[in-house]
Image 1: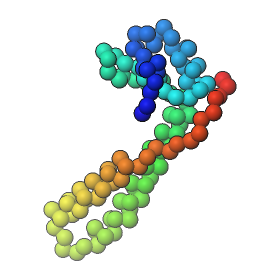
Image 2 (image 1 turned 90 degrees about the vertical axis):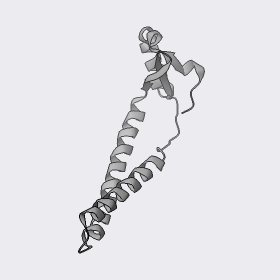
Image 3 (image 1 turned 45 degrees about the vertical axis):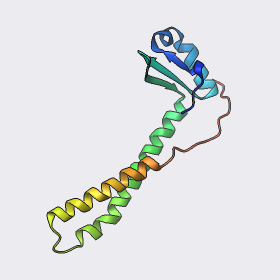
Length: 116
């Protein structure tokens, strides 16, 4: 995430400027990163970005469930499989899903100035 220096704000300063910061993000998009003791603490983002993130996470959960549903018949269908083998297969599948979801980029879209 690339931020301009002016978009990184100590939370102590952000308290007094919250309406100004929120208006800027709502009108122009982007992010304001709030810091506490010099470390990232919270962010101000436009509502559309939050909605996009929730949609992305829901789609990712659905994709993961679909992958599990596709893999289960193969795993369960192995007659004589030991419990240890079943656990190993399940752990392998969980690892693959975790890697796939961490490599999936967030959706991007063009931002235009918004009127509030």
